[in-house]
Image 1 (cartoon, rainbow, N blue to C red):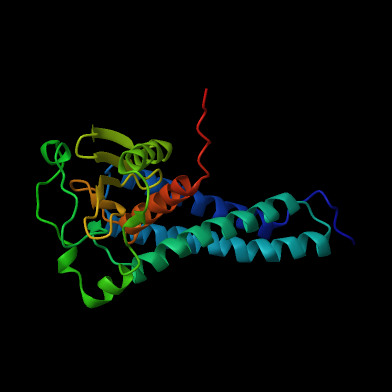
Image 2 (tube, rainbow, N blue to C red):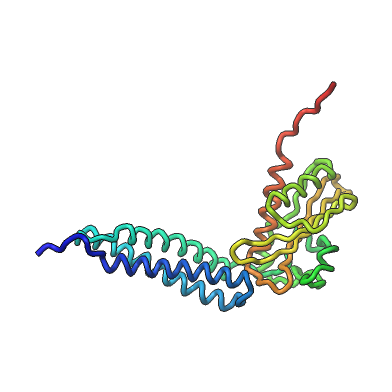
Length: 258
């Protein structure tokens, strides 16, 4: 006898439950790390389990979609949702795990290792640590990963570039700690949304005597005892300088003459 179509396919239900569990475990792990319920090492283990759950939901969801069509059962929405959730969670965690294995876990990165921008206000603000610069302690492999982190060099008025640098920091929703227009020095805190990692950022705008260029140097240091996620400091600097370069390259409005 042909089976009635009002029964849900068990594989579709199982896929949805597994994918939902993977999604919830991912969110719980991220927010637990953000709220300092646990540290980075147990979080990595939890992320791996979340990935396994989401991956299982994805595979069983594909099977569930086939069974729904072949056996004329309900559950196509559950199966499709499981597949989509599995893809999203799996892609996000795969990217994070790949970064953990390949990116340097350096908590203090700058565009100018020889003379990094100094922390002034942040050096006196807990839980900041007044420690020496650490990028010079990087291994050869880590140094290779940092080779493309260079200062921004432009032939523009340094005071104008400083104001643009400040505007971009605010645009990125960094918490501005101090602004010194006299020495063209900015300090801010960059807080990542998911993992809650805080980065202390120091920005210095200067004129290079040899070339006359305006140079923007940036330093990003993991704040206090928050976890150092590999590559985040580098990404923070790169994202900031790319956005600042776009701002500096914008066509200037013509001066209005009376």
